[in-house]
Image (cartoon, rainbow, N blue to C red; front, side):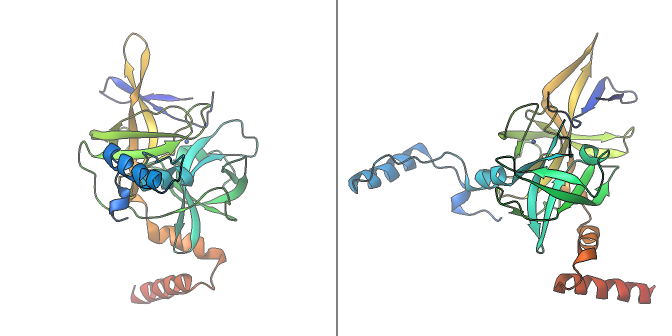
Amino acid sequence: MSTKKLFNMPILIFSALLLSCNLQSTPDTQQVSESSMQQINGVFAASEIENITISPQTIVERKIRRAAVKVTDASRRGHGSGSYFMYKGFRLVITAYHVVDEINPEHIVIVGRDNESVIARLIYKNEQNDIAVLQTTQALSSRVPMPLNILDAEPEVNSVLIYTGFPSGHDLLTFQGNVAGFEDMPARGRRSMIVHTYGWFGSSGSCLFNPRGKLVGILWGVDVEQFMMPQAQEDLIYASFASLIDLNAVLSRACENRQERLICQAIEREEIQKRFND
């Protein structure tokens, strides 16, 4: 575990390292109200169907939980978190770069449910903003990938964000929080989003979504205040903006072994045209 003091600032940032002690709006994305639940249960009761349970989770929240994965290495002595996506026919996992920076980039282990695991390779990294994109070698049958739909602007202050991760030794926890603000961090060469929600070691790399299912950010650190002794503020986390991901670079690397795909052929033509124009 490492801590770095920001210049001229009374805080430290804990990068939540590999430690474990992870749409458009439609009516179905809204939470079911208590009165609606009573009406629905009443309909089923009239039909003599019993034991009906209506989940208060939204459709998007359930999708986020089904897409959450652990990111680790072959030893599994520690982990980070991430989310499983499908983009242009490619199976991807997005996480924080510091989660995988010391792992063999061709042999990263992605863990789903019931201890299912697949191998992934690092195909994109943004070290400055602590973002990594991985490509899995095969599908995870225990997980359901989300469509990769990135919010292309900064979220508004106080807007709601949702994430599922694996903090500490816990298993698959879902949290909701609010964007508290933004911070320019010259010592790290980045601008970050501050979110009022829970985060701890192991949850680094978790993907934060808005209620419409758009990817907004990637969790990378926990706020630590500098008093007599450093004190972790578990209810303030730092996240990078997902809009910083270069999707063209992601596709270019993903296509290296799948040149027969139409999307890859289109990318190759664009690259050839670009070199010709230059």
